Length: 452
Ligand code: ADP
Image 1 (tube, rainbow, N blue to C red):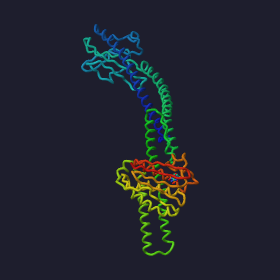
Image 2: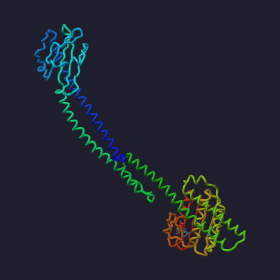
Image 3: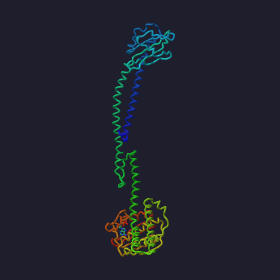
């Protein structure tokens, strides 16, 4: 038997408990019936003893006892009567209807109380005795009435034994069957939960275990599992988001870094040229580090934790930095960046995250612009507008471009993963910035960021 299985374990202990309860119940019942029967016999023997004692009051004759008929009178089979006389601490049987019975050898005489005792250990030969000191007579007399127990008690006890021997196993078997059915049915929901949990793997952590609305421990277990799945889902999404965002965001800085290195190796350079290339690469590497740290921070922190690191920022300065860093990309497509307006705009935000937000919009503008076109930037009244002239976005796509992994048209999408704008949206939400897009398909696209 496999006691590791909770069903078997429960059934095993349940069976033992039922068996013990039934055994105790049968023993108590047996003992009570036995006692009750003894009391009935005793009552009859005492009645006979009192009757004879009463007769002894008037006369004392040595052969008084001859020809006893009390057995018939009291309807008791095998009734034995003996009278003992006490003289100088010696007890002589002076009258009896059974010469073979010598009870005085086994039990001392006691004047002060009515004596009741059973003689013999063999249940078939046991004798129940009542001994009474007779104070009615002129001499010290004891009346002793006894009878065989087997025919009066053990017969009915044997019947009880037979009934119990049949009844107890029947009840036991029935209880085990009932117990098995109850345990099995109460384990069905547990098995269901196990199967459902087993079917959930890391790719479908959005699945939840259906509640059975039972308001019991099973429902509590389901709720606990679902809460754990929520946390797991949240953590795994964060990890996935982070790894996707990192790979997306690293593309541009790595391209710039690679361009710088290739430029340096194209021909022999002077020491000062190498120094410039190395310091630009170092600057780019530092930014890569900041980028990874910021994305990790964005995916691992809640809005409040991010807001705790807010500071006063000059958007105009950040904008100039981004445009400078993108110089090699704009150069490649001969794109001219022009400022329609340029004011000092101060906002409260997270420096690296705001930089990622603006940089992503500008890089998309460069990416999706036509060659030899312009990008118009205006920065005033806490509003930044970036307008490019390129492939544009169809009306029906505009509402989706901020979704993760959404790309308008794979053929048109220039090597992106559809992540840049979802990161932009995420950062804007944390800062409560508003982002708006206007576009005419194949004409222009304009992104507007309202900082207040
Ligand atoms: P990707 O990394 O693919 O560029 P984004 O989330 O940055 O992903 O952009 C989502 C989609 O929105 C892009 O696939 C592109 O089709 C469209 N899009 C974004 N910016 C522009 C833009 N300036 N001009 C035209 N289409 C754009």
